[in-house]
Length: 117
Length: 110
Image: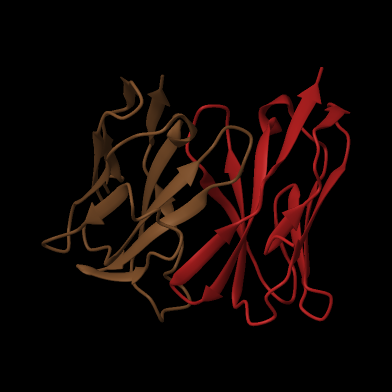
């Protein structure tokens, strides 16, 4: 089974520039998550999609972050304009579906490491 | 107070030692519980789910106390390869809202 694919793996930008990250979840996984992980901290949920609908975006800084999952498969996360404090690893994860107690394990991609100068 | 809290660490232990990680969660409606392992500069990976009756997988034992809202992970006979950060994860509703603790870093020393 192919895993969660993410790109780019690394990105360096200057503050106020924009950046976009892409994620392709495991085939058949209806739920897709974007997490932000700052060095030394645990992952923090930014947004959760169920198919192409948003389930939770309460912690997404909507003035600068946006995300979409138009066809219910792959997803993009955009930051515009970037700030220094956005330097982090952006992790995409997927799980099969909600409501199934045996199938709600998260599988992560390798992450996209962002450095904002 | 953070929703999921863990021992701050780091833990530095010799090979063969037994080490215990503690985790508490604040949301009593939480439904499922996990331990994830994260190697340096890698993504988190599922180590084990945590069941109410407690569960064991080789050298690893996980316990859950719903009344105290407490989760633990015990590693026996630790190996150099166990060196990683251990993340406690709580799921509020099945399939939704996975909340991660800050992690506890473990270094197993030769």
